[in-house]
Image 1 (cartoon, one colour):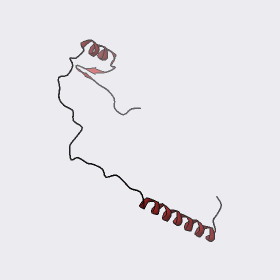
Image 2 (cartoon, rainbow, N blue to C red):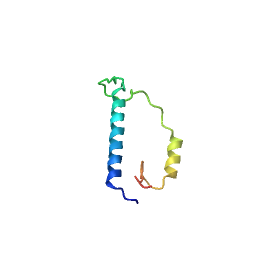
Image 3 (cartoon, rainbow, N blue to C red):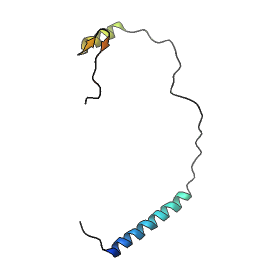
Length: 80
C-alpha cells in the first residue's frame, strides 16, 4: 500500500468535505411525502370456519416423519 504524504491527505480531506457539503445541499431540496400512519394494530386475520382435516394427508406425513411421538412430529430446529 502506498503511503500518502500530508499534502495529499489534506487534498483528499478537502475534496471529501466539498462532496459532503454538495450532497447536503442536494438533500435540502428533497421533498418527502408525509407518511399516513393509522394507530391500528394489524397482523390479525378474521376468524372463519376452517376446512376439514385431511386424514390421508396426516397419515402420509406421519409415515414419512423420521421421529414421532403419539400425535406429534419431533423435528430439529436451526440445523442447516
